[in-house]
Structures are given as structure tokens and as C-alpha cells.
Amino acid sequence: MHQDPTALVAIDWGSSALRGARLDAQGTVLEQRSFARGVLTVAAGEFPSVFDACFGDWTSAGAAPCLISGMAGSKQGWREAPYCPCPAGFDDLAAQLMWLDMGAGRAAVAIVPGLSCEHPCDLPALSSIPDVMRGEEVQIFGAIQLTGLRDGIFVLPGTHSKWAQVSDGRVTGFHTYMSGEFFSLLSQQSILSRTLDQDAPPDDTAFALGVQRAAQAGGLLHHAFGARTLSLFSRMGAAALTSYLSGLVIGAELAAQSFAAGTEVVVIGAPALTGRYAQALALHGVQARMLDAQATWAGLLALVNFLPKGLIG
Amino acid sequence: MHQDPTALVAIDWGSSALRGARLDAQGTVLEQRSFARGVLTVAAGEFPSVFDACFGDWTSAGAAPCLISGMAGSKQGWREAPYCPCPAGFDDLAAQLMWLDMGAGRAAVAIVPGLSCEHPCDLPALSSIPDVMRGEEVQIFGAIQLTGLRDGIFVLPGTHSKWAQVSDGRVTGFHTYMSGEFFSLLSQQSILSRTLDQDAPPDDTAFALGVQRAAQAGGLLHHAFGARTLSLFSRMGAAALTSYLSGLVIGAELAAQSFAAGTEVVVIGAPALTGRYAQALALHGVQARMLDAQATWAGLLALVNFLPKGLIG
Image (cartoon, each protein chain N blue to C red):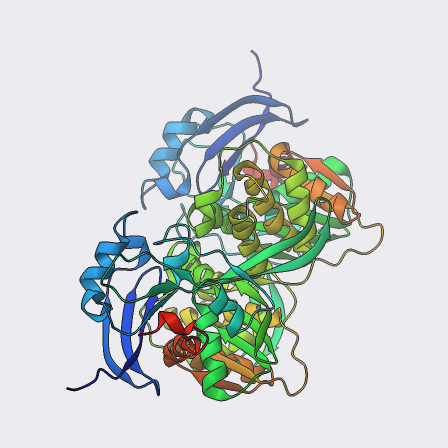
């Protein structure tokens, strides 16, 4: 009889997408599926049936355990998995897994909690402001596995970009930047949308100008208006302006960092986006190492080693 | 026979509103009208008929001259009035008035040009970035008249806030900040809109917290996400969050300034908004003097003294 080599059913259930993979113990993807069933498309109470329809055949009795990361653990998700406070490592994450009651005849299924941290701000009646991530923590731990780096800055660009500080293999803290969302709002809904070509291919030169402009005095509120006037005075075309605005926003994110000499920065995400960050970081004199979405599967697989033995198989 | 005391028909034709007043030589408003016929509601070619319907009876032959400020002079307006470059004073503005051909039997009607300036940025193939205003220049010159101040910083909060430097009665330069537009986008279209109460009354305490937070490291992209997490962790209510976000945005605008000791700041606009700026400026140790929309009429009236004599009456 042929034995199923699956070591983990890994699920990434984000706001807008749902994808899963069967992984063997070495992290090889045996099978992969993706669905347009992000958390935002699933009504309360429908998570079990959507899960069963997508992955029921992978999670029957005796199958490998299943770990789910991402927004499935949020208030609007399947079941809320409370944030694990920083500093946090693999062991903390594994200890706070939210095991789901799947009923008899099913494999063990758990939701991975997100991370939280506090930014001191010392204001009247507001001593600190929290920060959160859900899903990115698994990518960071995956990146630690894949790169062997146990110290450095791990960046996850996106709608809400995360900049995490990793020390001795643990996430000690992180900052969120609403860069992707600001860019979408500015390029699609603001006065700038009238003179931008949103479908234009990337323009590296214009992007670099935006990143460099963002490093100068004035701030994003002022620099963004420059994208309007450059168009008004016909000094930059509609195609270039989109990349220039992208540079202004990503540049504002970078301008908020202080890079120690020789800092290793790992950028995790889709290559089109991580490439832009690598270009922007280079303009700040910082070398970046890029990793794509494989980091999610590597992170979930690494968590298996921390599971209580009774729950596996 | 009773003589018409009107010295000027003053028109403020902005993006979203059209208002006009008959003023006597002392600036007393003899009659005032306003219409929901902002430039954005008027199709190309329809400006003369809209103007006639609203103010035709004020601008017949022999009537006082009429000056129009605001977006009526933009590309999308009645007729484009090229920007007057900074430094600029009353005399420059008056010399660049765009007289309209109104036909026989009509008073003289002119559009006041906006101002432009250049911000040096010393980037490859981009030595400077232009900045523009239309309508605010008249308010600034009006504020100079009303306050007697010929030197200082003049701030015009709004969708696109303007910070102008005035020296010896001339505008030497200015910076635009997209603060009002950012606030609208963030409070109405971003993820923050889900947990804000947009209709809440102002909360001065929460506003002050936002202004103070904005002065700390991190930048608006990061601080805005704090409005999300403060709600997620139930540390700030929906009503307070709206004012906190307003404080973050206006605070980011203020954080971009460098105030010399004893700088006089004049803030021009609707009292609800200028009051907020005065509160934010006070947190930065800067005293503000507030002026409302009367500044527009005062500015247009002051221009009359610079008109060629033949054009009047």
C-alpha cells in the first residue's frame, strides 16, 4: 500500500484569496489549490462549509494536520485567534494555535494566531499604541527557515506593509504602514487619478525620482500634490506619474526607517512588488534579499515540529 | 437720483461653490448671493450663461467692475488665466488680470490669475517641482489688508491646504498639502472608515492626541494604522477616532513646517477649521490669528486700486 507522504495541509486564508497546499516533510508542494474565497467573501457561519468544499478531501480522518494562517483568525474570520504578543518565536505561536472542533472522522485543524506589539507614545491617557499582523508572521518564520537568518529586518510589502525586527529567531516588534492602501486611494480616488495612467507599465526612472523626492523635506501630503503639478505643467507624462506616485509612497515608508550600517533586509512577497522595494532600498544604500510566497508554506511546515505529538497522524 | 454705491462686484468661483457680493468702497457687503454652481458643475461653454443668470443684473453697462477669483481661471474653468509667478504682490496680480470680452453694454469683468512657485529638488532631470494656488492668493492679499501684516506665514486650510510665506506684502512662495483630501479618503474610503463615526461632533482631546502623535517618528502611513488598532483593541471610540485621525493629518501638515521663534501665523477659512488649526498650532507653541471668508472680498476690493482708470465706471 502506498503511504501518503503529506506532512502538512497548509492553508493561507487571506482577506481576498484562499489557497492551500499539501506539503511533504521536506516542504515539497505535492498539490496546490487556490480559490477566490477570501475571508471578505465568506458570511459568518459559512467558514466550515467553504473549507470542506475546498479542502475536505485533504482533511479526512488519519490525514496530516492542517494549519491555517491569515485573516481566517480575525474577528471577521472563521474563529478569532487572539494575537500572540511580541517578542514571539515559533514556540509561542505553536502554543497559541486555535484548534478547531471539526467533529469525528476528521484530521486536526488549527488556526495560527497573528502577532501584536505595542509602540510606546507617552501621550496623555495614551501610553502606547498597538500594532498587529495576521498571516505575515508565518511568512517571517518561513523566511527565517529558508534563509537561515535569525537576525535582521523582514519587510512584507502590501496593502498594509509590515516591517518586522527579528532577533535570535524571534519577532521582537514590527511597524505597519498603510502604503498599498494609500497608493490605491491616491491613484484611483484622489484628484491625482485624473492625470495618471493606472495601467501603465512600471517606469523605473520615475519610480526612483519619487523615492528620492520622498526622502526630501515636505512629507507625503505635500509631495503627492507635486504629482498633480508636474502633470499640470506637462513635466511628467501620465504613464511615468503612476510610478512616480508609487515611489513617493514607498519612499515615505522608507523615509520612516533608520537603517543601521550593514543591516540585512529580507523582503517577502510577489516579485513585482519586492523588486520595487529592493530598488527603493538600494537608493537608501541598503541591500535586500527577496523571497516570494513560498515563505508561507515554509513557515507553516516549520510549525509542525512544535505540535503536540498526539495531534499528528 | 440715488447713485449706486457699488465699488466692486466680487465673485468667488470655486470648484464646488459660486458666490458673489456687491461691495462699496469701504468693503461693506451691500448684497450677497451664493449658488451651488461650482466650476465642476458647469460644462465648457456654459460659463457666460451661468454667470449672466447669477450676476447679469449686477454687471450691466455703467456698473462697477467685476473681479472673479478661484477655479474659474483654471483649464476647466471659464477661461484659463495663466499663473502669476512668485514673488508676487497686488500689482503683479492686477497686471495679469484676464479681461473677458463680455460684449457691448456690459461692465468690465476680469478673472484674477492664480499664483505659482517652484520648489527646488535637485533630482536627475527634475530640478524643481511647481506649486500652484487659485483663489487663495486673493484671500492672502485680503488678509494682508485686514491685518496690516506685511510679513508672516499665511495658512489656508482645506482640501488642498496652502502655507504661504509673505514678505513685505508680497507672496514669496508657498507649499500645498493635500490634507483635506487625505482626510476625506481615509475617513470615507479606507479600512479606517469601518470604525469611525464620521458624523461625530469634534473631540478636542482626541484631536490633540492625533496632533501630538503626528509629531512623533513613524510618519502618516504608520500613524494612520494606529487609528485602526486603537479601535481593534477598544482603546478609542468611534466618535473620538474621527477627531484623532483629523489630528494625525493636520499634525502631519504641521510636522512638515519649521517655525522660527515669534513667527506670526494667520489662518484663513471657515471658523470650524481655522479653530482646529489654531489648536494644533498652539500644541507646537505657535500663536495663530484667525480670519474668515471676508478675506476674499477684502482682497478683491484691494485690487480695484490697481485697475487702469479707464476700465472703472
